[in-house]
Length: 210
Image 1 (tube, one colour):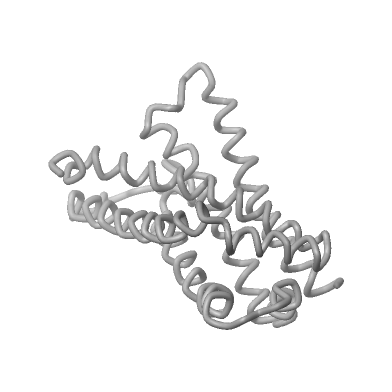
Image 2: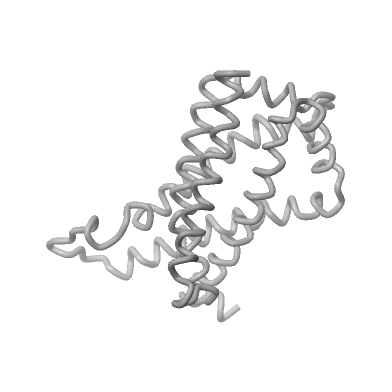
């Protein structure tokens, strides 16, 4: 416990939970993209996700990982704040760092708020009621302009959060190497864009087109 109570330990734990969630998001996006395949494809994917033993075990682990990631982020932000109680007379933040890196806690908390809404509107009904056609249920959610707007904004924020978090996690865990730095940075940007556009495009397609 001594290691994880240190600044280095907390950052390492934060990075590990972040990378864990990076994998989950990609799997989740692949499952959601089956919506474009129609009711049979998405219902089959939903059935698999809802009955596969490994996924059922991983769901609470992922939930705990996400909560731990948020809590650790708040702790790290608080520690950073109290370590510099007196601000600089002149601090050109825009010149020193990117907006995404300076506002990770802001985007993280907004994403957490969306997740809470998503659980109420999507996850709880799936677990507590007998839904025969998951495809129709999801498509109906995307017909709601307020839900779709919040959904798209949330994944744009998530993309921005990932833009910095992906590279930061690799650096903290020691995976990032100077030799491959440029390639890893490009991978991080590409991954963030794919996640943001992938999820957002699904919502916009079923709101405007389908």
